[in-house]
Length: 409
Image (cartoon, rainbow, N blue to C red; front, side, top):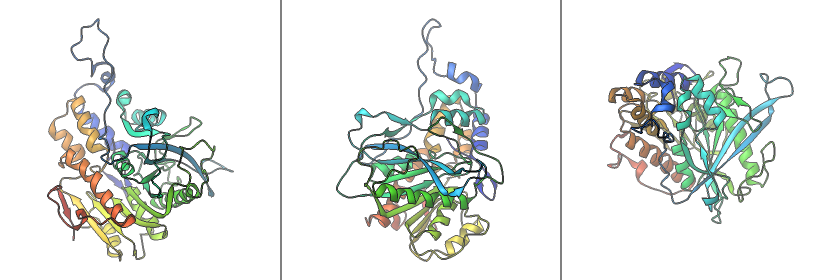
């Protein structure tokens, strides 16, 4: 579940669109959903069946997936909002290929406290019991194959959530990548180990600009290097999954992000050579000061609302790409089409009785099944080619398997 029309130069506002889309499509009062939506035709005396969860597509890779949360503090960046003596604080989640997962529970799509805060803000608290589970087994041992894992770091969009692209993230993990998703404090819904629930702030003083996100990305790269060296960066030194320490490859790191996170990915890739390849998922590329400087490392753009034809900042960034570059666009895609919305919104539409037009107003005309396959295939092909040197043909040009995808010159 994710997001919204462009509301300013910093990106897209997730909560406002979700609330508007669901409210516009609701055919029954949302307050009644949890009690009646799944009651079916059972007799009044019969107990109502448990609500059916929304589901995410399972990853298609050969490996099961594990996941673990990290609580991180960047002591080089004081936090003026939290007050004297406080520093920039983040939650991050590591996804990775795992083994022996049978004994480890599936992780929720969103921590309970964060989910409740998000849905309450959107006026949709009744949907909380239906929140999906992920394919990630919390705390499962890392699959060790004799070679370290390439690492990807993910940045979410404005007023969004680090799990918005779980389909993409767990697909990459099932294919042998370690993926670290970041919860950008003050611009997201997240939950800390001590039970604190953080929500977005609508304060110009909050560190929520694309440049702040980029600084978070680079700090998390530092933490990846600590993990690679056998050190635990978690503030509380909580136990990590067996095999995680020393399993990451700091010489093969990439970054990707959606919306404002895509802009932040571009900013961080320009500034930090540790990022060997960068992917922007419909990033507006709008910053103040503007993105500047030439980039000689591979960069890919998956466009929807923010095309080079309509977004001068995206066109300007593209003109400074001096290395391998690619810009694709799926016909019928809107800003949220390359994320979990493609799988979740059709299910919500069925639950709430939306018309086909109401669903299209929310996620565009791109076929949802095709949209899911696109987000599973193209980021994998990009990072495989540039971090693993696995040359495929998907990025060479249009594919009959993905008729909606066009290659922009």
